[in-house]
Amino acid sequence: MSKKRLLTGLQPSGDLHIGNYFGVLKPFVDQYEQYESFLMVADYHALTSKKDSENLRQNIFNIVRSYIAVGVDPKKAVIFKQSDVPEHTELAWIFNCLVSVPFLMQAHSYKDKVAKGLEANAGLFTYPMLMAADILLYDTDVVPVGEDQRQHIEYTREAAAKFNHAFGESFKEPKELILKGVGVVPGTDGQKMSKSYGNTIPLFGTKDEIAKTVMSVVTDSSNERPENVYAIHKLFRPEAELAMLYEEKKGKYKDLKEELIEDVEKYVAPMRKRYEKITESEVKKVLKEGAKRAQKLASAKMKEVRQKVGVAL
Image 1 (cartoon, one colour):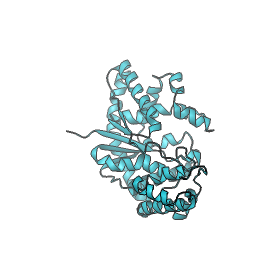
Image 2: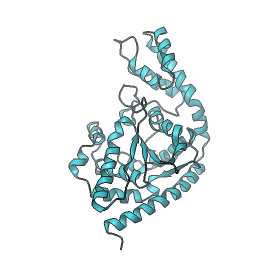
Image 3: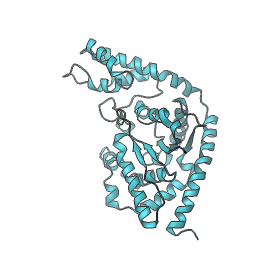
Image 4: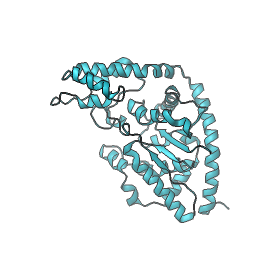
């Protein structure tokens, strides 16, 4: 039997942090060989908030380096850039014409980002339909997402259902793949770790940079165990070991943060070393090969879609 198809991706909107790693990259690395896997650099999604072209270009290189550094073999997964496959935006437009404004207004991520002060541009508003296109173009079976992104997959299934109802069976409805314990990675302030919240711990930062951010983790002085520190720490060490450590150092917040710094550094140092060795020419080669493989599938799907909606003569 052929493998099921899996797709996931990250926006090149800044340096990656441990939330990206545990929420997307590690789950992907742990299981991608079980699937026919697609790993997308979501550069068009990044334009909803990114307005610095040179910075975006560098971030694209860095995110591909990150994929490889954490253990993804480009020969065993299709690593590609969203903008290299124009069918993504073409299909997104068709989905935009099938869903209503009130439907899109219910998106949790849109309301949350606007509430946090992000500009309410049209791209941010229609983001779920571009994500639906990303997924449905490839007849994707499963999509690893954080718990807070479950709604995006529900929106994707809705887009597929609306198209299938209007034009005939064309898209399979994907399933979300949410791993317990890493659905939402906490940041230094206890909220979801996110660049937009400024509460991240860098994935490939120096030990000094890691130490600076860990020392900034908000602690609750009313509790003998600093819960925000513990919530991050259990990503790096088994909870059975942590129970002993946190009992031994009860109330010693600085000591516990220093233990966390050492555990983070021990974990990420080998990946950082690999990351620093990957060249831009290697990245360009990976993206060129990935685009070729992704384009083949996307082109075939859009040929079918254009026929069904009536624009193909």
